[in-house]
Image (cartoon, rainbow, N blue to C red; front, side):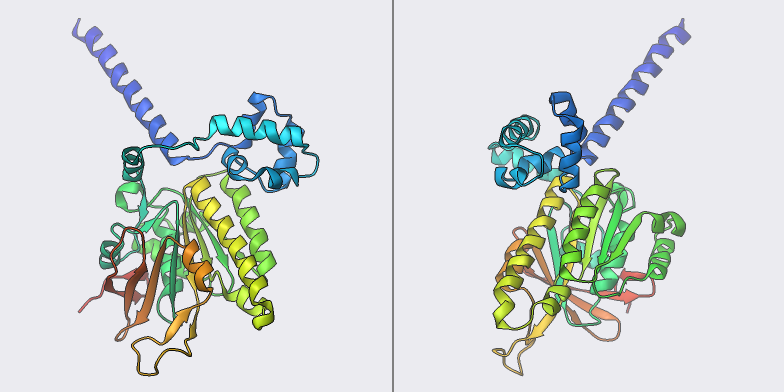
Length: 347
């Protein structure tokens, strides 16, 4: 009799666990692939045309302008209107209360930086769903932090990760897989598996850099990714567009690139982490604490949600300062650079 009572109870707990797992999976995957459109009467060849044009999710259709969709070869105005109507029904884009927005932010995942002090400064780590920018001179730890995040993003959420893969766009030739191996060993991950979970590409010019984002969108629509790194976002724009005569064109192209990054962050719920170079500020006094300023001007400043300045300290010590953030106070902390990435300062 007791065995008969226990069996249904065990089955109940098993069903509860399955429902919980399904809910967690649903929370982790924040996008819908275009295959969903087939259920709403959109032909498979039209879906293929959208894929070829760089649209891989229903969210990308919902967020795109009608004019942009009309530019897709083979998609008529009537089809554009139908696509927008379907996407509107599948993707919530209406007003919601501030309370609902607060509840949504409670589920926001942050990626640990590898340093307890830096995590405290950022109130948990690097935020998913938005762009975080770090800028500073050479040897301030920008690339080291990029490498560390590529490993920590793969860890369980309870350990400061996001249980996802990483995409690394390298514009300066500074990506080092060997460094990833060392960081993976530090965090107790299998180095081979950790390296398999990082997709890297070397961008050779600013146009190629933009094309890689389209490829990244295609890759992310097929698997669970939690991080996009661009190291650095401005280096190629800085060399491809020279002088004041090309400044306007450079800023427009950079704005397009950053808009695409923002779209990917929101669409796939990934953390976008970009590094930025600095230039000497001729207006700054020579005796000023820091006479450099980041490249990109206001366009870069407005596109990035959180901006962090990095400076050199004594030895391997580095100083991170929150320069701009909608939630974090302007403050700073110290961290260190070691053989296994970003870590805390040891006296």
